[in-house]
Length: 126
Image (cartoon, rainbow, N blue to C red; front, side):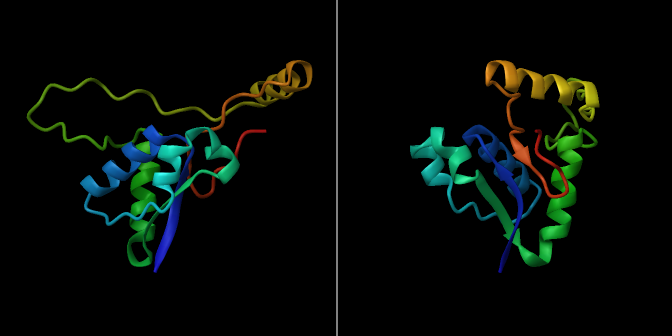
């Protein structure tokens, strides 16, 4: 039995996420990756590509992805090589940013882009 731990909306995000999980030793199942490869422009309409792991390792894999996504850890092995410093963790959107996004959508019918990777417990932008 597999549990979905994330949903990705771009092929590059799916590939990097699956690679990071596999490099960390997790077994990964990504059911719609071939559809995403053939029809990338439909990814939002299909609801993204679910990234699943066995239920027994779902909590650990989810914590690993959250740590990578927040910038707490790097999925890359940096021991013995010269590595760049990690970027600062992404800050939460403030109310002003959300209001500007809504105003832009109302005036120009354009919204801010969706997040590339949706993790459990995170809300999508308005």
